[in-house]
Length: 125
Image 1: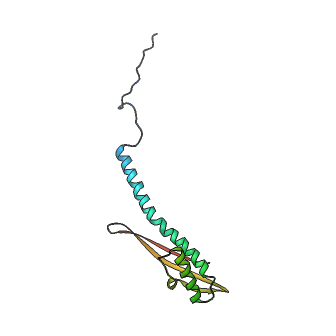
Image 2 (image 1 turned 90 degrees about the horizontal axis):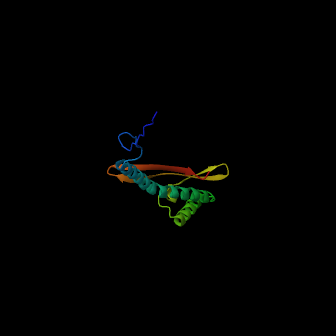
Image 3 (image 1 turned 30 degrees about the vertical axis):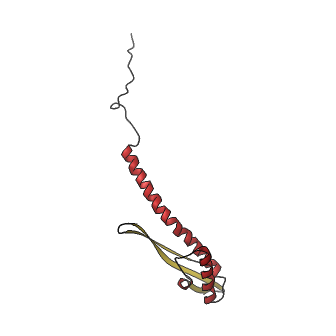
């Protein structure tokens, strides 16, 4: 019995190909670029939120409302905080501790009529 030699079939119609087409790669690249663009605009607002949180903890060291707001404004000047001022914070007392709370929104224009609105809030406690 003689074995027949079968040549390697390299036809693409008979083999199943896997992978990403060029158009698919372009679509994925555009989506990743758009997500990176939005993230690059959101990241500074989050860093500012962390600075506001830190400033509110520093401001809670004050004993009067005017002193607390003054301490917050000084910390805001150092950390370049522009979203909120000392007059925008709420100062309350919980027991013997001063609690500084804040709430604000940031808007980021995406395209056309589309905006990304982020609401930040926190307190020194």
